[in-house]
Image (cartoon, rainbow, N blue to C red; front, side, top):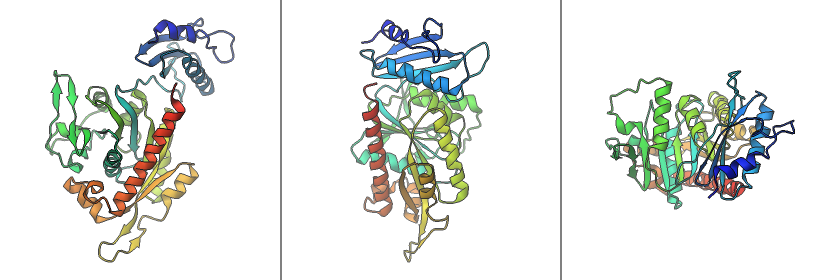
Length: 357
């Protein structure tokens, strides 16, 4: 196992960009920790120049690959306390969740696009591929995962009064604020409380060994989203949108949020791509045609799949019996299976390009 001294010796070879002097002798290394195979390095940035921050981050990561026993590195670049500023696009230190191989964030720039429906069915479709899957409902103010999975009255148990045991349903592990509320209790919390709950759901839950933890984020780009992206290394984001222009406009904001904290976007899911009449089978693009595909191409992202607007999907979620399990031969279920296949392939590709690190 690597030691702090091993990490510090390698850091002494990292030069501050543009200088011949290393960051250790400059006094810029604020803290170093070794957690298993992960090195956590906190550095003070005396400049707010984003390009310098990126160059330094890359240099540190490159050096850490040479430390025996270190497979991962979390780099935190912090503002100089004398100026109170922080580089705009630096990534904070993010330690992985023990036992969790990948975290996938399902996000949307606006509400009402079916993000939670996509998150639940994606998690189940990944589980059907033989993966060990967890689902974290991070929509603190509007949790819907308990109802969509048919366990609205379940209550998680605690271990030693400190750790939360997730609810298990359909072979996946679930945590949601909805498990701690009755159906009439509003969550009237300011940002710090929301951030605290998201951290607790990440780090105080007994997730066990998971191949993928799917996180259903609230709409927008607020406290819950930034807490997730700053606390743990997210393998990638899945952006959910509908085809109309007003939803597509918010896609760019969501992608910008992921870019700000240096988190890749796996691709885009176009939900409610067209209405399918349950009586005559007519397909009608009531929200516009191919908006998700065009936006994905413009942003150089993959279109992971298109989900039609069908009554069976809505009815299955209301009953807590997701369509991907209830009717596996349904076109919607097949579409989710394709999305899950593409997400899993992206995660495998990311692992191949980042290990060892």
